[in-house]
Length: 231
Image (tube, rainbow, N blue to C red; front, side, top):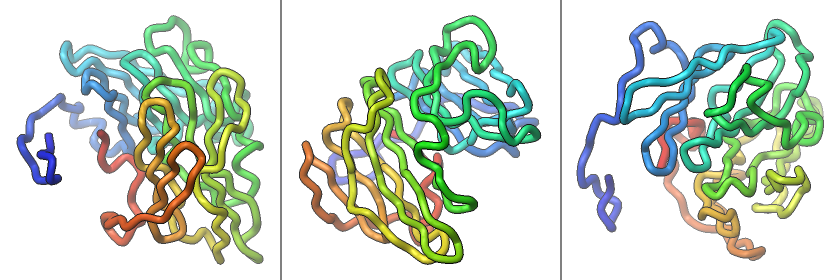
């Protein structure tokens, strides 16, 4: 917990991960700190931090989950990115939202919200760090186009979870040689009408349709935002 001035007030252990899973990367904690999701290679586990019990969601159809793409709305709804792994084109590629209490496998318990082809239109330049708003109404993501030979174009966008429709641009368009600096959402209010992001080497505030640049001090030269910490 943090004090109002940002200083550490207290630290507490919320849960532990089995030693055999320590090489996994990527995790997400629910807003009330009751649920944890952490990467297991191409799948993930969801766990109640109070009870220490959970469920393993194993990859199907030789696809895989991007570990840094997971985020919660409440303690039952989890968003994640479903990608190619051993199978480069498994069914249902893209950003999905699941009910972690549902029956079935990883794909049966989730639904596709934004297809992969709508936000990743290049090779090697697409970015992790998608964020589901706390009320479960919006997915915040980076749409990337362009090529390594020319430049990449990044747009930070909000999409409706209910309809999959694009709702808003959350930061100015960024053009960069190569993959460029990260362009990712960092924080949102529950409805997604206020968003703090880091894009193009600086902070951006989106406030009910208005954009403004802000000063941020990101860790590790601004390159390792993905699931290194969670609110």
